[in-house]
Length: 78
Image (cartoon, rainbow, N blue to C red):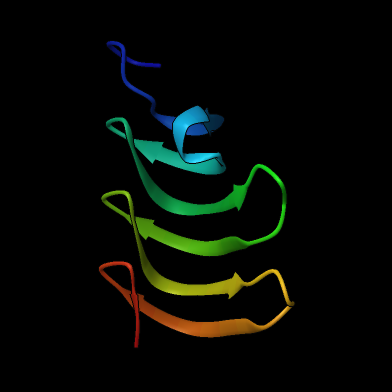
């Protein structure tokens, strides 16, 4: 932490969202490469982040093992 904000690589559990993020932070937001997984492990996203949103290349996996691999912009699949 730098001045009370997450910076660099780390892991954080979002209790109220039942999610765990492991990856890069910049100024307290997810930015860079990382993995967001539900605490029960049923779905997850591995890829690029910008300003706390899925942005760039990534893979999203659903509980039934379906996957989307491709480009994201502002948390949306292209």
